[in-house]
Structures are given as structure tokens and as C-alpha cells.
Amino acid sequence: MLPTFQLQFSNAFYYVELCYDSALPGRESDCTKYGYLCDNILYYNLMTWQCPVTCDRCSDLITSSPRTGKLTNGTCVDLKGSNGHSDCRRYAMLCRDPRYASLMATECPKTCKYCSEH
Image 1: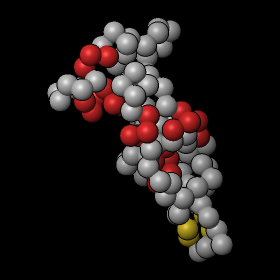
Image 2: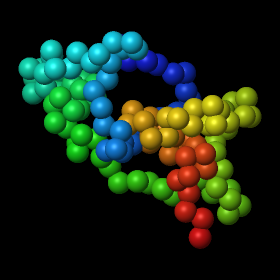
Image 3: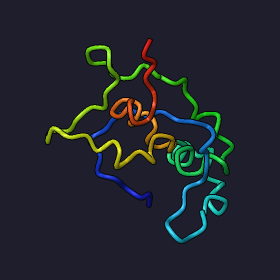
């Protein structure tokens, strides 16, 4: 089971520098124990997401950076939730997490420094 966050974000963007096998807090990853499932069609996506190191799939998680950001009146801004506030600073540590980086690039381009303001 992966840790979950209540975020109003979507998409998927990955960086290779943070490729790691997932584990429950306080426990070692059991990916090597289940490595035989890496190429099983029923578990392929799950194993790629949970155990990319064990399954040798870190390079599969890389996409090119969107780095366009959200510009409003020529200014890079983070998107706001229904409450009119942004939680981007609260979740800034997710900017480079492989599971949330694209979400953050879409929702929090300013906080994550994804804008190219020229």
C-alpha cells in the first residue's frame, strides 16, 4: 500500500533522479520478493510504478518536462483550489517525486519552478 495524499491534481510526470522501489513507512521494500511479477501482464503496470528499480524500468518512467507552466498576465502562477487558495507550498516536496511530479507541474508550476518566463 502506498502513502496517499488528498490532492486536487491530475496527470503523471516522472524524473529519473528519484527512481526508487516503494516501501511502507518504517519497512524495507519487498519488491525483490515479488520481482517475478515484473513481466506478468496482470502486474506489469503496478510493478513498474511500485518497483521500477527491481524491474529495471526507471527509464520507462521518464518523460520530457512540460516546463511551460501556467501564465496569467505574463506571470507564472500556481493553480488554486475551490477554496481560492493554493496548497502548492504545503506539497512542494512532491515536485520531484516520480508519482506526483507531473501533477505538480500542472497545478504548481511556480512553486516547482517549471515556468519559463521569457
